[in-house]
Image (tube, rainbow, N blue to C red; front, side, top):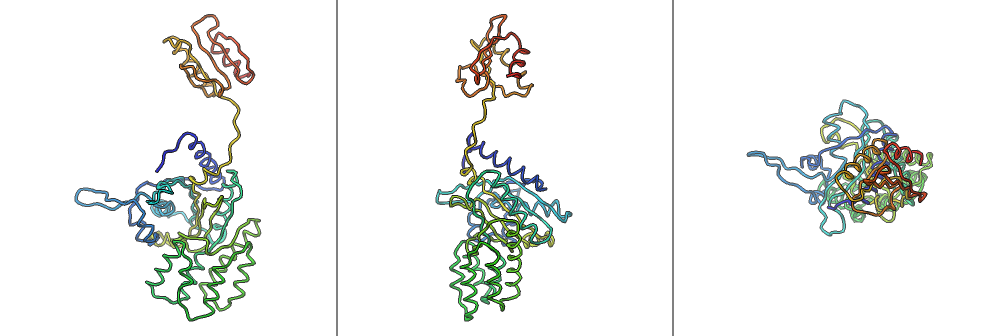
Length: 405
């Protein structure tokens, strides 16, 4: 876990401001969930793999003679789904967004254990439209942040699950292979035994599929007319979304085997890559809310990883000097009192006013007001842009000169 220094916070707030602005423009409303959630929220639904569950920060919330096991939230979507079920389930459609931290143990020291993310979730609605909406919303945020050379990759969890069903494995074997796939070991699928040559050909074709338009999916559909109904349904869903993105001039790359960690996803999955890092991702998770006893509500969403995005933000242009430094020469009680009065008046007029009694550098400010005990000219006003100085006798004159500046 890490501290965020002033320069870090400037970048972090920039991400937050752009993200909030985009979400509100798209009709999303902000929510916030507790840092602590009950452990069963993440285990009862089977949404986390054993590998992920081994990384959660879990402890007993002791209450007298009993207690509940709680966790520092390891995921952003599941708590928001719980919030929706508990508080907003009467709404057939809800667009929600959040900025939050999540926690996961990481033993190598290469990654943070506390990670910040900006996420948006779409509850309700029909398919295709919401899927494309969350992808385009994420792209809107990334574009407005000025991050260049970002690649969008698409996959489909439904296709993978339907393909695995074709192997007709035992529930235990199927679960084991799926856990391996979720952790990024796609070779586990190719190692699954099958006596059906057509299934092996379909597996190889799907895992090797890399394309940049919906036509690649049409070729798969035409090449395997005898695929199962579940596989065909998932492929049609994928094809509809890819076609919509084509028509909206949204560039992407289809790579089924590029994804991992899609535990609760049921349909389209996507991720954004920049500078060799995954900076965000999301997808459709129609079974999550029902598994949490929240009714048959379809949903989809995404998250951008703020810690990674912060490193990729382009350098901001230096802003014009706009602050006003008020310096008290001698720092007698009378001068200090006058400095505070000058600062209060300037702030009341909408200016950034900072006090100095130590003689700091003046280069970062637009104006410097030096306060002395001399009369009638009690103040020396310096315009740091124009390199000009002027003596004035009152607060009114300072405000007049600065406003006309």
